[in-house]
Amino acid sequence: MSDLIFDDVHKNFGEVPAVAGLDLRIAAGESVVLLGPSGCGKTTTLRMVAGFERPTRGSIALGGSVVADRAVFVPPEHRDVGVVFQSYALWPHLTVADNIGFGLTVRRRKASGARKGLAARVAATLEQVQLDGLGERYPHELSGGQQQRVALARALITDPKVLLLDEPLSNLDTRLREDMRLEIRRIQREFDITMIYITHDRIEALALADRIVGLKQGNVQQIGSPAELYQRPRNRFVALSLGQANFLPAVVTSSHGGTDARVRLGSGEPVAVRGTEAPLPEGEDVTVCVRPVDLTLTELDRQEGPWTGTVRESVFLGDEVHYVVDIPALAEPLRVVERAHRPLAHGTAVSFAVAPLAASVLDETGTPATNTDALAATAAPRPDSAVSSR
Ligand SMILES: Nc1ncnc2c1ncn2[C@@H]1O[C@H](COP(=O)(O)OP(=O)(O)OP(=O)(O)O)[C@@H](O)[C@H]1O
Image (tube, rainbow, N blue to C red):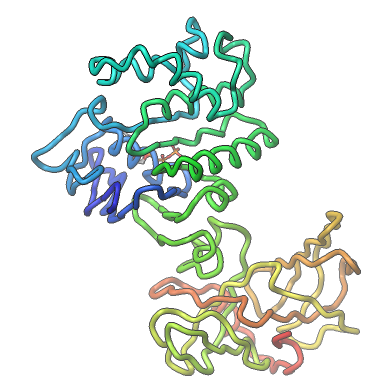
């Protein structure tokens, strides 16, 4: 059974469409991350689930019951959702235990006579978030990470149908963010919690999601597992949301649809790439997305045509070298990440190769392909050796 269903959910603020037609079914125990830049509608979506906003159109169902549609609007206190905000929102004058217990006592459980079990529930929840023994402290006596654990515990103690987290790690330093990321995933998995987590941080999205929803200006761009979105992004926006990417013009040489295709870059040998769902006609101009780690450079004596180039920047980072390479046939410089066994110096002439089945064809109907334009402007013949699969 789906725990949470969005059916064609829209939310407009005046003329601003904050959320434009969200269709999503979240299964019980699933962790879904809404990923997108500021203003794409993440918080609005979360607020509609919590009951702080009402959809302009469409419906939201939670645990089998509609909580918001044209006719129904269940108020926040009757939705059984737990919310964790970026700001922690703890009561400064209450101890940790009272902050956590507060979440439970304001719920119906108080009325149903469960109060006597409160101390035991608080202790168990403190243990769940690994804060055992700190119940008598006040929030100002805790670190930022510990305070966020208290906020998490306060949401968890009510045993919510869905846990909503709104950029909960933004106020923490890098190290604590890493720890808390793992901690939230552990708790979510261990207790089989249905979770919606919103962030603009790609690492958080990749680390925490069973599925990621890529959002842009209120519109869903793609929904899928972290690996799907990373390895087969539908468009440039999704590709760049999850990390650095190169977008290269190519021509389809064979495709079977749903499976993998072969494309030619420049006049190199065809290279196997991840195809699109629909078959691609042979000869079709496409754009392929290649991650920097899926390219390799080969040193040349001199540049041999528009599909070879020169190293503009070479940054040694210990395990890896990050290269920026100017290729005349491409509008944008190529980004390449290689193991740091033999850093190539600035100005070195190079050819590049794409690893087989590492690149993917974008579905960019109607999107201007800047790199293709650049290629069309380049008339010089290209040596076959310049671009090949490795
Ligand atoms: N109460 C409101 N009144 C008017 N416009 C609003 C309101 N809340 C949000 N918006 C607008 O709706 C759009 C989506 O906002 P939302 O806060 O959902 O984005 P977000 O992705 O969560 O951004 P951020 O990461 O900055 O929090 C934005 O254009 C925002 O300005």
